[in-house]
Length: 393
Ligand SMILES: *[C@@H]1O[C@H](CO)[C@@H](O)[C@H](O)[C@H]1NC(C)=O
Ligand SMILES: *[C@@H]1O[C@H](CO)[C@@H](O)[C@H](O)[C@H]1NC(C)=O
Image (cartoon, rainbow, N blue to C red; front, side):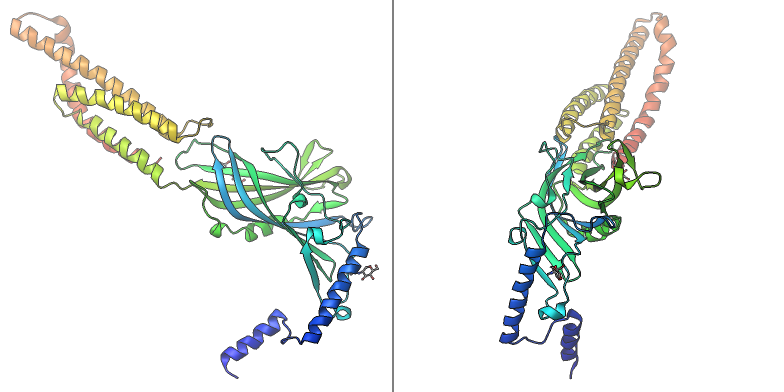
């Protein structure tokens, strides 16, 4: 027996795949499965399993299949999700030995009895709909019943969820989008398992999720909490009776802006303006004046362009906005100084030529000379500093 043969055998053992079943065996299995379906149909009731004993616990795993559209002005994101909800229904239990080794039966929701109990799980925080849609009211629900009584419901759905936008760090901002699953049952009957929290992190590995526009999914978090008498949020039942608590499972998706173009759109003009403002320290008067006036014009245009890149209603002044404002004020002050400096120097020149006393100029001229020299050094240094700042917003 060579290696590949060995591997094939090994995988057959581990996957629990029987060696090529005969036609007759297939026939018998099919019959067993039909019998099981029928029994499950008979055993189905609309009442909740496990009543009177421990509460039903549902393990909910979330997988983000695809982020589709992030609407920054509405503050919503549309995405395709899959949920795998697992619970125990002890009314369905069989010994596979009695059913030709059939260990599980599955089918889409309509193929099961309408009496088949599924937990009432609702999705909260949906901006697009008034009432909370039920998780299992979706078209794409696939249910598997296992011989242990484990029921697994796989739901494929798409939804639009709210995101809490904060553009303060734009264009290096992070956004969180959240939604909540809840059920109308009290916690003595039904709970979301704490494992949901751990598993969804693992199950929802973000690597394969395509980016949505500017954003990339960088993390996912699930938190289990209870609402006591509809008023107080509690983390656990310490001091609270489960009879009066309802379970909630809150998912938070963390997104990071990844647009490669935005830094270029912002860096290039900012750098150019910084350099030109820096140059005015060493340019002759006329050119310096023209350059400063052009820079103010460019800054205004740029502020308008940046405002367009940003969504309409955002909270938090973006750093880039503050930088533009600071540069605008600085340039206006520089322009005022420059005009004043030119005025003083002209007056001084006039005084020398006309051989007249001008006490105002005599007083101010030495400061103007110092000021002009200082700007010659300070402005280019400041330009470099601005370029550095822009790199780090
Ligand atoms: C249906 O219920 C009966 C009686 O409780 C049980 O013996 C049987 O195993 C159940 N069948 C299935 C398929 O769950
Ligand atoms: C997003 O959620 C995470 C986890 O809850 C939190 O640590 C982070 O501060 C949130 N970020 C924003 C921008 O709200």
